[in-house]
Length: 169
Image (cartoon, rainbow, N blue to C red; front, side):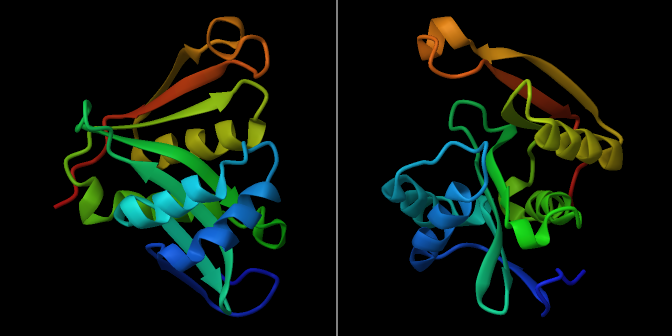
């Protein structure tokens, strides 16, 4: 799959030097919450095996941040999925999720979890597509509520859970 911007896509784990490019991509990808540059740098440094960078001709055009929650080692949590405007509509988000789930760092995970606001149709579509490809079930329930957790300043974040994940040998 080659994005319209030309060149071949490469998928890899992030390195600390990717932090600024990841921050720009997230900032250019509403409705994603912009994290601090330091947060993105920590993700690139502390969780490279559960994050994915999609690169085209040296430019980052896709990003997934994720981690294995220490208290829930049977889960992989996907924090953010960002795709550059030049590469949207090509299935890049789904391809990055597939690459993430094929990595040794996600071995043994039985469930993929994420949080999504109710109006984020692109994310719901992305994760519903993943569930279909895996033959898994997608369930959702409110996790962080507008009033109780965000003091009215952010929409309710719904937890989406996809499982069971296939066993990767």
